[in-house]
Image 1 (cartoon, rainbow, N blue to C red):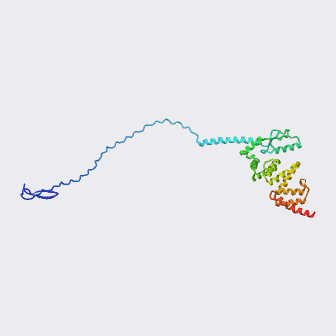
Image 2 (cartoon, one colour):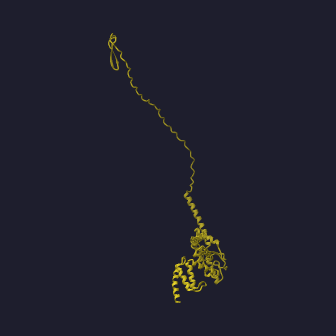
Length: 345
């Protein structure tokens, strides 16, 4: 085979001579051709089986028992209304019964609840003051007869503690407001007396001594529902005097010197002693009493105008102000008046 043979290497034509002697020939270096880049294959498509049509199963039919006829129950509001109605009826009956009990104790004379209930011999309960007045009037003019039955009866009275306790309980509960007009102030007085007695018995300090004096005067004058009791009044005042109260000493002396007690000689002498001691301690009231005794000849003392003027002159300067302003002013006037009388004599 003669002639050039063409080999295409990398698209370059290189002649090669063959069969010619003496001509250098070099075989070309053959490089393998570049492989083409691998073609990226698309991801295989996954074929999903077609969806089957869902078959919904019908839920089983539940057979319900036939409905019973509904029973209407009372609503809570109806129950409350019924209960309130019954409560109101019960309260009405109770109020009627309590009122009836209160009416049983009404005094037939005063037509009010008695503050101091007593039972007379005719078996009925009265206010003490009212039945005592009835007995006094009846005995003066005719035979004593019952205000209720008009039958003859005795004058003996007995304290009815049961009636008083029942009335007090009814008044305190408030069910007898229309009949307890006189009882309400009495209950207030009892509370005051109770508080004052607690203070008087609570110690020996100034406040306790003041309570002794106040409570003693209430007994002396019969105030705040207390019965007049000179012995209890004097006991409280004397206790205050023993604890150093000049005012209590003066009032205790006046209790002993009271006209109703002058038939007891020992009381009079002890009263004069307490009176003089209180005046020396600076009591304006004791000084005034001594001046009046000298002026008017009281307590068996002779009239002594000079001594009366002397004691009247001490009243405005007393250290214990237990006399009234009127007594102090009167003492000053007496000093002037007695001075003129002494000058004329």
